[in-house]
Length: 135
Length: 120
Image (cartoon, rainbow over the protein chains, first blue to last red):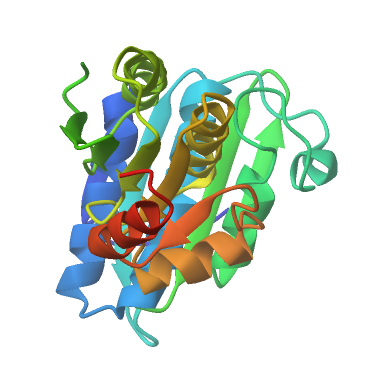
């Protein structure tokens, strides 16, 4: 995954549960600053919550960075963890697959809520998720 | 009682106000507190107000479904109120339409329904 050039508009370390709420708030603020519509913001922030919780629960913590991109205007996040990785991504993206406490709709749900979704996971290395949406 | 949610009693109804940025631990504490109070206060109705929640993700959605189920098993009719339109649309897309939960648009709607059944 090639990174965006600019410095992120926000960066949140995911070390404990409260940090998931902090990640939601950070993304919400960036989208407010972009003049995002309520439904688009709700969808994207919900997806961010799923991904952040996933990084915390399965990846042992991580970091979320948020960018504002231009032409066309959109928000992008990248969530990285250095956890055990996901052995079978296709299976993990399927509704109903759960190894922890969600209903197994988290990853697949997040993908449905955003306009672009990329996941890269390597066993023993970690998982990186990138998501984009218009404001 | 956890700080991220408050339980108030009005007549025979327990009102649960859930605040934004509630954590997983808070929600689990809330389940325990609410189930104990339903029994100790002989509540016949429960209203869970989620108007303060900007989003409901799959974890919180599951907890809401569980709170409703626990209350129902303890013979208290439960309503979830104050859901924002964008939250409803997002939950449907997540495949979480809370099939076992009753909803009402507002607290007053839920109280009216409970009173009509003699539960408030």
